[in-house]
Amino acid sequence: MATTAEWRWRPGQERVAHAILDAMLTSTRVLIEAYPGIGKTRAALWACSASDTDAIILVRTRNEASVYVSEARKMSLVVIPLLARYGFCPVFRHVPRSIFYDLCRRIRSSNICNYYNNTVWRLFRSETIELVLDMASKCSSIEEIAERLVENNRCPFTASLMASKCAKFVVATYPYYLDESIRETVFSEIARERFTIFDEVHTLFTEYISRFRFLDLGEALATLRTAYRALRKVAKRNPDQFEYVLNMVARGIEAAKLLMDRDRRRKRRVSLYDAASEVEEALSEVLDASISFTHGGFLAVPAKLEVPETFAGMSAYIPKTLAKLGLSARTVEVPPPQPLVKARIVSGVTTRYRDMDEEMETRIGRELESILRTCERPTLVVFPSKRVAEEIARRIELDLLRFAAWRGDPSLEDPIHVDVAGGRLAEGVNVPYRAIIVVGLPYPSPSPAMKAVISRLGFEAAEDVMKIRLLQALGRGTRAGARAWILDERAHNLELPSWIEVEE
Figure (spheres, rainbow, N blue to C red):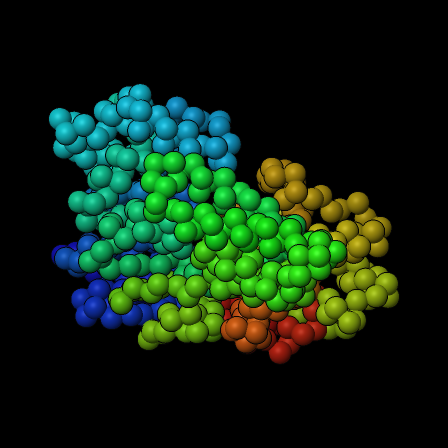
């Protein structure tokens, strides 16, 4: 077991590591709210190394999975990444996702994929597992591991899956946990009897509410038709098993057509309620969600998350709504020794919907222009939406705003980067920003789906979305000790974390 004497801890990092270790040793739950840059990756890996417990670590992106693999290698640990089937396949590298899985299944079932055959043949299985373990101990990214496996004529997904089942530590992206079809076929077997570590645990909340969907009649019909075509292909091999579902979806398609054609529905003497009920039943089967007919469309509310009995979750902000999703746990707060970002809240401006008129847009534009003339570079400007960004930009005399995020290629050569809240730059591109300007509090738009989220989880859910987006944007400034401005007087009422110092 590693000792803390071997480590040069960042302030508070040891506390994070021991909070995770304690949860692992006592089979309990813990949520850790720690400031950005504390080094959660190393803390989690140290806890894993200090415990005899097998663990699976869930991360948001491939890049974050690579960080775990790379950091583990530096610590003489081996973490096996669960490589995605789509994206690492050497046979169908540029095939659209919509047809990839069917093509992959066909060549595997026909025994014509040599990469797959070389991976699963009994003669090569132990060699494949040893190969993955060796690659994970030597490579610094999951892309490099995948490339080496392909060079050895192995299927990256299947090889990593085989190695994950016998590895002590595994890292995977959130879809393996959140997507039910993947979870049942892949994740459940790997995660069984393992301790779960949720990196950026707020992702569970944001991903869950993103699955609330509102489908108009046309979208509902298209969804059912797509499902029917897919089911018919599967049913050819086992018609008895899928006959009931096929008939249900077929009835839903016919009912959706009747909902779109009132005259035809009247001739058939089918009530609106009966037709809507048929569609609700079919959609609930297809989408695995609770379906209700409302506002001339169908609202899909996802099933609640399946939560592990024991886990550790880490984030710079723990959404209050997590408890309503079943992720209640002891909370540990780890503040920094001193604030990392100094922020000023600008009064007299707001992007509150009822207050947004030409006068307010002009006022915001003037404040923004004044800050842009004097603040350091590089600068990140974050708007609540692209529409608001364009309206404000029209009122700025200086030609300063370059929409780098929408070009998709930010670099330090651009003095100013502009993004929408929750976008690629605002969430985590590694640029050492010296100034962060957040224009308005980024509340989610009041769509039917968001209204359903609020109805189910309370207005706290909308506040959590806003706060996650706001703190993600401000967190981009922690590397360089940036100055920040929040152009919305409502921020005076917010309880901001200790790593942000609000200047009067």
